[in-house]
Length: 80
Image (spheres, rainbow, N blue to C red):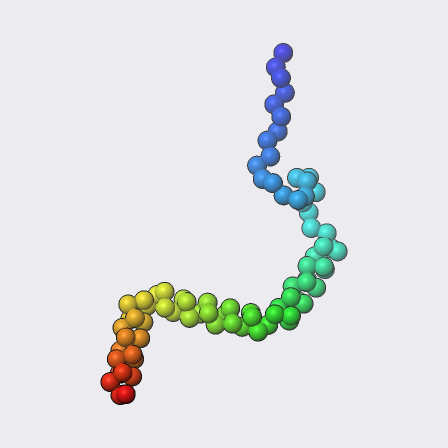
């Protein structure tokens, strides 16, 4: 006789594989949390957004940014 093969789980979550559906109460709680969370830390969120945009600009134009910074330092040193 063949032994039955035990099913292997391909992922590990907090929910059982047969009960992964979202319930209305869960979605409502998540909606409340997502609306409240940015309000508590809106200054940090704005700072994060600004730093992400600066990082994106500098990462795409690294050499140009370094040349502009070096030129600014040079002009500032020359003017003193």
